[in-house]
Image 1 (tube, rainbow, N blue to C red):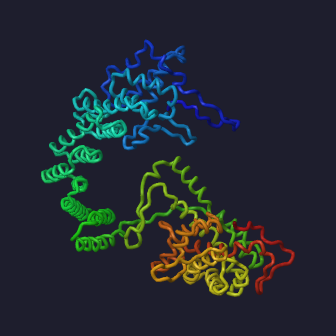
Image 2: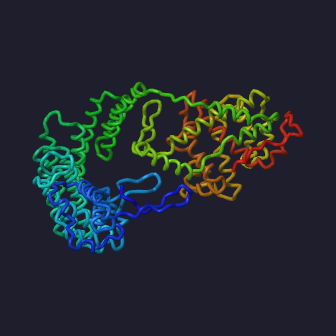
Image 3: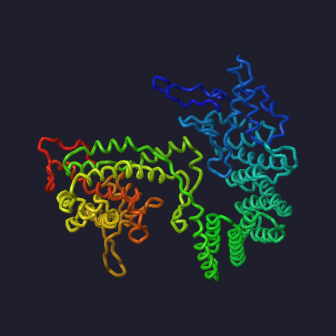
Amino acid sequence: MDEQTTPESAPDGNLAPQPAPPWEGASVADLEDFNFEVLIAGSKSADAGELGEIYRAAAASLPPDAANGPAIRTFGTLAAVLGMHFKPQDPNEPFGPMLVLTDGRRSPTPADFRGPLVDLLAEMATRSKHPVLRARLADISWVIDRKRGQLGATAAGSYAEIVEQVDTGALTFRFDEDYGALKYDARDLLRRALFIGRGTGLDKAGAVAASNTVAKLRQRALEKKMPTPTLWFAHLDLDFGISPPADIGKSVEALIAGLPDGTDADAIANLWRLATRAYHCAKCEQDKQRCQSAAAEQLVLMAERQPSAMLASHILAEAITELHGVPGLGERRKQLRHRLIDVQAGIADEMSSFSQPIDLSKLVEHTEQRMQHPSLRDKLFVFAALSQSPDPAQLVADAEKSIRQHPLSSLFAASHHDREGKVVHRSAGAGLGEKENFRRHITAAGEIEVARQSIASSHYLADDSFATLLAHSPFVPRDTLMTYSRGFTRFFQGDFVSALYILTPLLENSLRYVLKSYGHDVTKFDDSRQTQEDRTISSLFEQMRQELDAIFGRAITTDIENVFLKKPGPYLRHSLSHGMLHDGDPYGSDALYGSWLIFHLCMAPIFPIRTQLTLPFDDVPQDEPAPAQPAPT
């Protein structure tokens, strides 16, 4: 990695500057009587990174007395420019760092060459003979300074020239032994050339050459009956409107009809999708719908051949989606939905459970020590303060740190299935849900259940004990006081089914009650019927999230949302309300945590007056101080 000027921590904790980059001080004057292309004059590489390695090795081999000379500055500049990560699919930021370290250091980007250095890049681009070097220098110069439109046009023409020379064999891509330009590398270079053409003018010579090359390679892929290159260059053709889209659709259909037996089924489905897109662009609605239907049937055929129920259900779901919007196929969609349910029934047989033992003995011991109070009152307040809802900002920071340390874990999306195999949620990579689920499980097993058993084994629990405490809580409406008390009595007695089904609906009412006490309107008005009704908890979080955050804090509201309302979390409120919980669910860690969280919300406001409260038949020693527990925020 090239050295950067980014500071890092020194052993004494202060920021120590890093060595200056090798291109510091480089200027156009360094090019006087200096042939910077002599190292790559005979190179047939079409890969910028490979050329960059040549310059990097040359800079490292220079004698020590050349450390401050023009050669090392020029070679260092070219190694950095050619070593950038090429992202042709991103028109606004086509070059990025090849390496980013966890301490913030990174390899070079175009931002490092702003200012006078861009003049050096532009001058070298003008002098360059090698099309790969010329394309990279001209492109980065244009990215940094969009006023240099001529350099942008030069870059576009150079990219097209690279592809032409690859096609003739004059240049080759790294690790490529095949002849011709039907390669994804060529597609990427042409895409970049056309993106530049949009900024400098698609009528300029470079953009025109790139467009002609795309059309030529698309036609060649069709003639050679090569599905994958056809997909590459036909989609690129459609992206930039190079050829008539109806012609592309017809040619793709002709290709599908002429493919030999044994052709990859997934490629055929993608070709039908390509034809669908082409006819959509051409506004040929009937042809588009016909190809949509053909793509769906190809997917159905793939699903029927798939031995895995999980993969088959995924492909069937794609087929159903493919038929969306096609008139006259409602019955077929219905048949596929029924087939999907039948296939999903086999997913459970493919799933296997695994366990990772975790030693919670220290956490359990610590919880038991916290519960060493003789009075029920003190133990209940300790129980309410067992945990704190995590700060959402900290969760994001922890996730970002985890991604930096384990980048591959953030690349894979996930589908979440219910007991019947249905996909109930799809989450992208780098989600926060798994870590939050883990935290709830540890809290429930190592703290909540341990403390609950300690209380239940030492004290007689009755509704009036909880009613005495909750009567002072502004979270508990007066007309639900005894219902809340019954719910918590059942919870501490171990009747988790009754507790969960009593307490979960009460949470919604309490949130409305608190909002109203702060002067907020929690109703919605139906203009057509001129009626009013209270907002549901989902509506409160969608329409009044700022008000909830202001009252409870983002940590609490996010915790409520993750446990009761949000997928892929437990989704307790919806599951309970619609009878989707199974017999064992109320005994799970998510349900235990949810019941505890409601108890926490009820008790948090009365922590300041806890020493003034007395429970019926509770022996509170007069000389014992109140439990040293921090009041929840």
